[in-house]
Amino acid sequence: MRGPDRVGRAGRAGRAGRAGWAGKDFPCPAHQPYLPYLPYLPYPPYPPYLPLTKPIIAIDGPSGAGKGTVAREVAIALGYRHVDSGAMYRAVGWKALQEHVALDSDEAVSKLASASRIDVSTARVLIDGTDVTRAIRTPEIDRAATAVARLPGVRAVLVDRQRVLGERGAIVMEGRDIGTVVFPNADVKIYLDASPEERARRRASDPAHSGPTAVGEVATLLTARDEIDRTRAASPLYAAPDAVVVDTTGQNVDQVVREVLTVIRSKLKT
Ligand code: C5P
Image (spheres, rainbow, N blue to C red):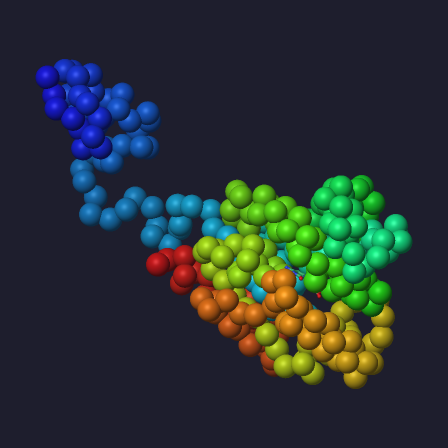
């Protein structure tokens, strides 16, 4: 009779065969702590920089800091999915305006949000099957999204959906509260920032966004939205204490993407 094995299971004579752990106690060879007839390797048989789990990368920051472009490029480089959580708040704001729902009624907007199907991919945003990819990039929807994002009930609905999207890992999610609330245990947290002037310049020249193109006017609108995002009671915008802050002022997209990828690779190695 054999005694209990190293993980405490009671042994039975001969059940696990000659090599002990090579038998039925482990369901498949990949779950064995070592392969009994191969020479023991002093290093892992996989490159140490490849994580065994599928990581979650959180990218937060204010409007115009470059999150959208950088998150998309980083996701492509890593072969991960990319989710723009801001597009979900925009889609809910759009729908609330369509249905003449008061943007300050948490009960009404949360009801609308939980009854809506929202599909976000890098290319398209759909709400209940309607393609709103372009329609949600207007100053009116900027305001509506920021208004509905203040409501705790709406945030609870969308945060749940964002967590479901992140369940499988291998994802880059961008927003305002991804590293602080949605995925407080994200493998890597990046906080992208840039000077207010630079953020306004970028937003003014963003072809995906309609609205004013005068940098001064855009700057005023951005500052007002940022102020609401930073000071609201529910999940305000701030950098998580364990986030790496990347200042993108004066840097082009390639430089920022390279810097962010360097941070991600060094974090995933440890
Ligand atoms: O990122 P974007 O500017 O598209 O987001 C629109 C609005 O949605 C933001 O101004 C913010 O109020 C809200 N938002 C949020 N939390 C997120 C993403 C966006 O509150 N995770």
